[in-house]
Length: 259
Image (cartoon, rainbow, N blue to C red):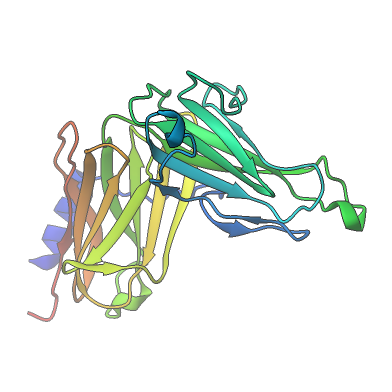
């Protein structure tokens, strides 16, 4: 009976097994004494004393380069962010080797993938300072897009042999949260920008134990998308998705051959 069910499901659902290129995303250590720390937080505008509206978004890009070659922020269309000035709602500020992207509360900043280019060479060791690394950061999207989960690892009795891949599209992911049975999981997680044009990300999680896993993708506005899957006993790599505008729920079909 289980074999017939497996064959039937194989003909009805799609199996995702493609691999994705690795691109820079969020925090990482770079060669030649540089370090990138990208995070989105809310802080007061440094110009508050002048009656300027508060900043709700501040994203930092850092480098250890002690020379004049520091990081630069770019809009999704490729143009440089301006420096702080009156009546400019989205701009960058510099403090030592730190470059901040700042956005006012009511700013209508373009949605999409912002990037921070930093030098990977250090001045003092005579490396090529023209070589730069890019960090992509998704900001300011109005919708949560859609999310789906797939499972890799084949049929196994051991859940720790499994890897869950959460694919989010339709909007940059500024916050990604994995949970197991409603408990947040941080160990063994990774986020990779798959396509900066369509803002498609892959969020992977190495499974440690059986349970109901949920991947929630959110942004700085009140919208999010999530998907969940169950890992228990012997399972098959099949899932069925419900197609909804913002929420897409994917369920792994669990087979228990011992029964």
